[in-house]
Length: 156
Image 1 (cartoon, rainbow, N blue to C red):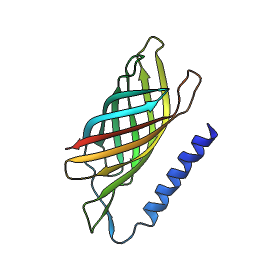
Image 2 (image 1 turned 90 degrees about the vertical axis):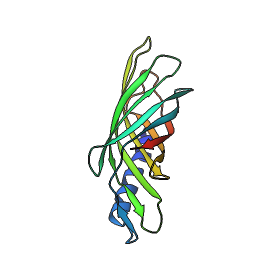
Image 3 (image 1 turned 30 degrees about the horizontal axis):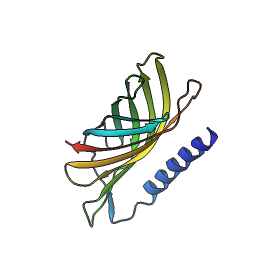
């Protein structure tokens, strides 16, 4: 657990350093919302689901999700601090993010999990976004493990 907290702290400090040393050729960009398919690897299984992002402000996002593992349905949301960056020389836009989430599993042993979340969105075009995130649960007393989610989103 200590190892995951150190990794998340490293990600957060790297994001802060990126924000403080943004080169002149990069600029902050306004966020857009997205929704699309996603795959979650964790708890010894692979789950397919739907992941979304709704920009609340230039730096805050609400990220609702639903996944369908073999032991019920997982749904919840994350609140993240985002650092949307764009290179003025190209259309490539990357948005590192870090935050917290709450996840509810509706299986036979209903479990609510609070987690730390970190990752990045990569905007490939005006309508397509790729996403990857690391989910680190704050408690593992009911068998929760670290997960990795990857997916795509259609921007709107």
